[in-house]
Length: 187
Image 1: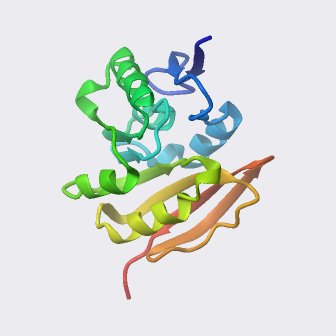
Image 2: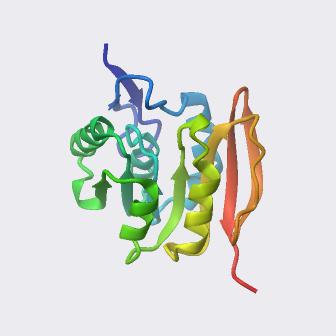
Image 3: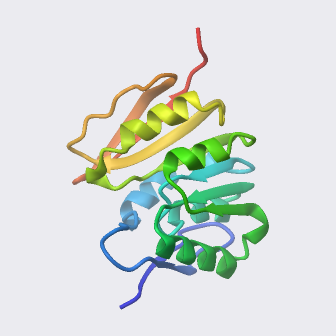
């Protein structure tokens, strides 16, 4: 059975995209995604986005639909990457995106020539990768000044400040939480 998620707003509003089959990926719930993009809607236009544990590419594609200028997508699953590429092609974002199929740390290193304004971080909940990814992002030099990292995680996990990434907001939706981090300059 195929699973679909929808683009909520922007140039691709109402269009559906495919989500990878199986339990390895977990698309962001519509209510969580609506809330997330309601919070950042005026901070997307012309921005560069990294969807680090991309799954279907749902978050990065929503950002592109709402006016982001570029999105990089990464997922370790080959099946997920096939779905991401198909979704990008379906929505016509080939010229505004790049897709990688590597470990998150390798993806961050391979993007060292780019700078990002917004990072969507949605690692597998139980894998213990959120703090590692935050630490890697904090020190990698790929974030623009004032960049925002938005981590989706289990609501029972307490978010932490990591390096130059400082937690400034947290929203809880039942068992899911969104933690918002901002890159702050070194003192």
